[in-house]
Image 1 (cartoon, one colour):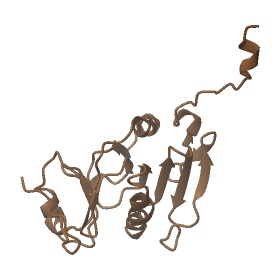
Image 2 (cartoon, rainbow, N blue to C red; image 1 turned 60 degrees about the horizontal axis):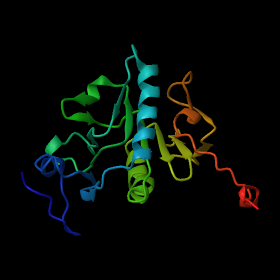
Image 3 (cartoon, rainbow, N blue to C red; image 1 turned 180 degrees about the vertical axis):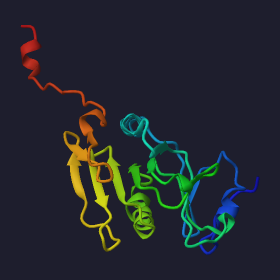
Length: 208
């Protein structure tokens, strides 16, 4: 398969993306390539697994579906064919309630909810370019989970089609999911437990 050509002035489409090696992990936003390597850290995988389990358990037997990366989401600007789509991303977690958006390639169109787990190499893209992409295409609810600061920011799409100020939750909080009013995610169960550090004076252990 052909490899992506790294160029500041060249733009790509899903037609190009679909020909690239599966060993290379990329996202396209408005035709611009973003390298997704290296692989996520363990804490990223732990948080992703807990969030996926929470949504999977709640949605069992319900029409909405939850998926975890790698899972392609194509964002068409209109009714253009897939090969001309300029934005395709792989959210860490996504929920889709319209089965007509799902096909063998993944999802075409906006999921109902997207969660991105931040890392030092992707935080800027997730919080700026991808947030803008999700807002423009009507993703109803967008979360960022920050493993370093143990915070979750939740953006909900307003009637004006824009995200307002995010609600911010600590690792001890419970998030009520706006698209499922009876679902609350306990963040104590999402973030890995922190080891307690006991600080004592070493003098008590010294022998005379």
